[in-house]
Amino acid sequence: MSDVEKANSTHQIYERQTKPSAPPPTRIANPGALGLFSFASTTFILSLYNLNARGVVAPNVVVGMACFCGGLAQLLAGMWEFPRGNVFGATAFTSYGAFWMSYATIFIPGSGIIAAYGENLDELNQAVGIYLITWFMVTFLLLIGALRRNISFIALLFFLCITFILLAGGAWLNKLNLQKAGGGFGILTAMIAYYCGLSELLVKGESWFGLPMGTIKQGRVD
Image (cartoon, rainbow, N blue to C red; front, side, top):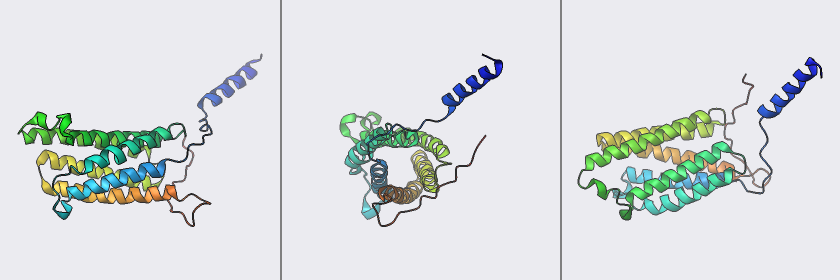
């Protein structure tokens, strides 16, 4: 074999290894709407509680929602995204499903999490603040991953970042105004998530209309 043929053969092997492969065919339906609606609904309820809507101060009613809707349903949506080849969707849905389950666990008396702090509410608030700022970091990394997807997901994750920062600041500084601001941005985040979920639900050919997601043109990046 000549040097030219060897070079061509090596180049072809390299192309096969580096060229992104298409997701394998699957009969699994798009779980995007399920994941987004579950996230939006749980976020909306908790954000209203953070705003003390209707005089509600204790957020414990959200526990069931966080366990089964924001938690289990969203986790399943993430698992179904894996065989579809959607790494971003799988990572986001699974992560936030785990977030809601872990958040709900804090308020379940049997977990002993809140009881472990006794009457030291300041230490509890500092711990919750660290918990929330960690999820801000996760959300920021997902925001970077969404920068070339569409404007709707960018807006969703951007406002979710702000929500986590405000809620973490409210916990650390024990400032009710920051908590309420986080609740306001949380409602905005939930509305965007509802919009994205409806866009996923309105399948072309099966719906009277569709909702634009603000697709970003995928130009070549060398």
